[in-house]
Length: 117
Length: 110
Image 1 (cartoon, chains in turn purple, green):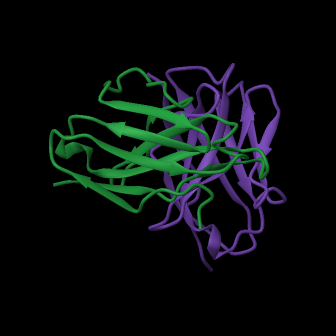
Image 2 (spheres, one colour):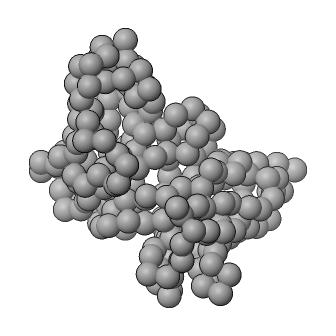
């Protein structure tokens, strides 16, 4: 059974960089797309971006200039970096695995990141 | 304002069938695949349907998905109290070049 686990700071200061890692267990990152989705408190879901295991990324245009998603096959994990954060980036961040043409079949439990000084 | 439009809430009695609609446009649902998720409070969303009508292993056939034109529909038969959750549709938008979600529908099993 594939399991995903997010890790990283729960508090980030405004203008700094949010960095999260998703560790994958029970399966390999090889041959899949991996991505990130966030959910602001009490709000809906927002797609952030994804990366194929060997490279090739897609990002939400609303975040594109600030976001990087990368996969580390040697560590069987992938990561999210979001620069120049503001309070609007406060959300629960989920790491996900893509399935089929469009679906996310495995999700991490989510990690709350608060942007505040 | 979400790119995909879902009704804010639906309700039905246990054992009945309910459908949840997801309306989009020619740049998203009209030319791309749709997936559906449900989310219990405080938990991560769970995949119910992907690629319009495919069920992941472990998802009972009470859950069904369909797509027609620029709309998609999730059907849930034999409603159970445990089905009470928020339901989201999602797809790729070729104009926005981004994944997009519906605003969510809260299902109440009366």
